[in-house]
Length: 294
Image 1 (cartoon, one colour):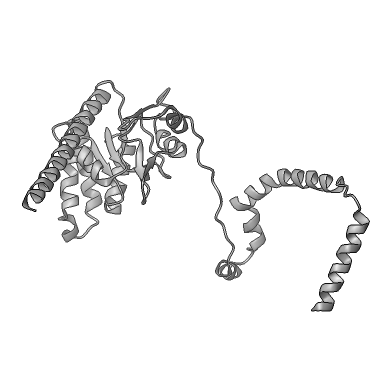
Image 2: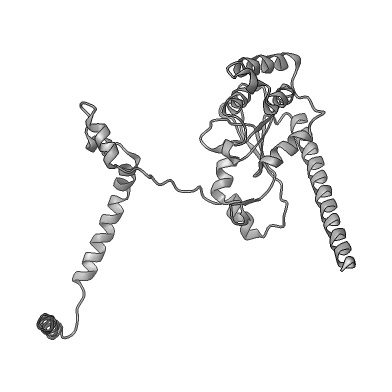
């Protein structure tokens, strides 16, 4: 029994040691890659990770790096402090606030759902102004924010969807890699995919050459919306429906539906059943029988 416990403890220690070595190797590789990107003038760079912990861990591997000049550091400090003055004195002493400024002054940022809203807004502003050269973020940064970069890096080709690890879909890759390339500034964008697992050709093709995810309207005209609209003068529910994206989608597919209906009707009219009259009489008699039995 004691030997089994010792062997189990040894296995657990070996796994921890192996995991620690893998993390150190990943951090070293990330540091080399970021230094290469900056040295080649391919910044600003967005590094997409699918974990908040990874974002913070990768940012720490650049703790001795400084990508900003003195004037940029002063601008970062001024913008950050002006924004944080809107918080209470107690909130300004939070670890998240205190530890973020030294990182931002060196041109490195972190953006994920665990940050305070005002901190995320400041980081977005600094990145937009070109004061951040490297930004470690989750995929939320790619949704609805116009923040293009010159280079996009994927730290992994798989993500956890709440139940299991799966490959990144073509739509997700298009959404995130679309941040690479600034309109009017770059002739092309650069996307770097760090393959942490072996990829089959079919999987790689589905990721790199896949199609974007379709958009479907979830517009619904409910009772509450109708009652609220009745309070506004010169506002009709019909106008809102006609101007909605939901109506646009319906009208766009209407010609296709009409064409299918015409084809189905022509096929139906061309059907010829043998003994059709006899089948009709039989069906009529069966209906009469069911009525009598009822």
